Length: 436
Image (tube, rainbow, N blue to C red; front, top):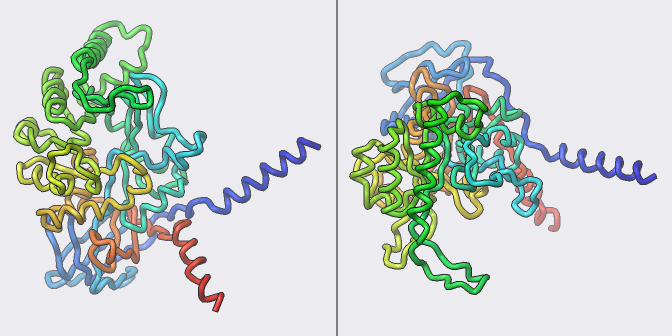
């Protein structure tokens, strides 16, 4: 009898769960599509005020000013976007989308592994393509993400996905693009819950922790030059950043830490390095530019980290770095980061209010992250030959008041913009009407 009751409960649970699953992924593009009349924001700083954009088989085949071309649109599906705006799909790097569904439910939390040195841990295979949080990105134009693990000294390996897929295999755009390392902090706080002084103080173990990082990479080099027997999975994964097949993403915020991380990268001849977080990167911008090291800049909508910082420091960091010639993209890690990821375009919009032009701000979430993540051959801008990953908005996509999507495409596939949130809105928006 107990077995029957359990079976009934499980069946009921699965029925409820399936009833609230993500929208079915869109089918492949079957007909040539032309978008006419829109203001096209190419993503590289160029704007076409009266554009025509044509794509077929998931690829852009024409991006031009309508005044200069007279294409034959017969047989195409034509979308009149006059008065609207077209943008490349936005890209969010350093994200845990799809790795955690409900923070308070441990069984849905898969963003970190136990241990300190985990370069062989692959975030991609833990990615849940049917996450309700993932589908809520699309109505704001966020269509691509770098899925990144957390924890330890070396957290693991990230991958880039598109946000409309059946499973992680379908979602993958670029698998195992890089390894993420948390650089030791120069400062630490006491654990107040254990009665320790919570004030910021120098990390006495900093040099030791940096030496441990050095030893890890020396160990990897020794392994690579040896017999490689028995196989050492963490070293096997780490060797990718040494032979240039993977990027080393170094998560670090303070000035000395960034400087030490850059020098570490140079000493080990690491071909591709990216600073993640980079709160004090503007203080060493010349060093970053000289070594061609880009920055995935911390969330814009946050408070200053230090008491003597300008009140608007997080808002203007992108401007300070851009003016110095550093390639910058925006990320959203931190408190409630998965939910806040949908605000990516509005983070970029805030940088406009603090010095960047709108097209420069747009590059922070389109062309620049595509370059940094190594997917710019196919994504990041609206250019002939690239994948048709784009959306149409009724207004300025960097303004939360006007970024209202009418269409969105990933690789030419027309996406559903319905989510559990839009369903709830439709349901409860009629509540007061029904009580009249």
